[in-house]
Image (cartoon, rainbow, N blue to C red; front, side, top):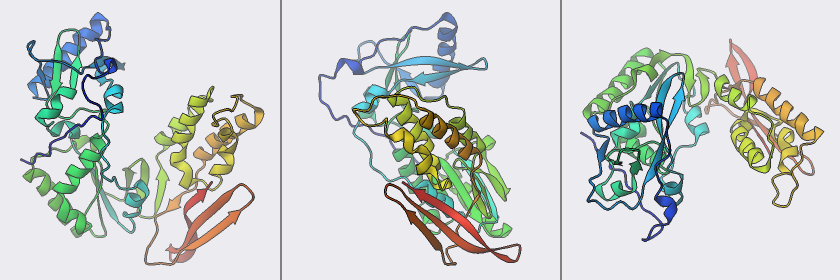
Length: 354
């Protein structure tokens, strides 16, 4: 079985600050009962262990129970631990590059590892940092939990080590725990699927059947609707921005701009639309919602609902770049002439603006 151990290094020495020793969060009887069930399940799966009373406990993380439609879920508040964790700089592929690798594929497979993070062991020396405190005891993670600062980098490294040959041969795309296999023919599709599933079996990793889609010509992947020809942002993701309330302070404005920036390459007028918000981000700026900023907010909402389809580039064909600039703005569009329905059509690939 393949093991790729997860480790944590802190950028501080003992004695640790009090923030890292969190007390138990209060919970209702219903939440405590649900928490006991989750703890028992994690113990049986070997994900956590009970910390003995004679062991020294220096760092603890609180747990809360989140409820949705009557179902409970454990949530860990690792924000203070993440603050003092040395970052792992292992590179994660750029989303746009991963998406363009799907170019010219006629068949697409998407797969997701089942509880992927929990399939990673935590090194013995790092387990003392991953202790959660609940109403009944202190528990220690033996396998990597969700919400840890370096978990995406670690998981990307692990997946790259599992599939080195397949990646070098271009048989699949790995974006953290998302696996995408693209093929031009059905025979090639089945061969690549067999290779990938065989590797999963050899390292005894499991995939989620609910998130496994095989042989599609259009499906959702990496937050987009991907097809043979075009890319389109998943409507659920754009709805998250559209349904956000109007920002009421600087913090909310910065959060909104960060989140909406995900769509920058999809809209040719993005920077012009969001420009009224940036004046509020200055340190000395006085926050005040004006009519112009309100119009900008509504314009951005509308733009996210009317984004044009972006076609997947064909790197065997030439590109066209259109550039426009003024005193305080810069914009560019990447186009390409592709054959669609036996006719040459100039299509949009991406937009850039600032």
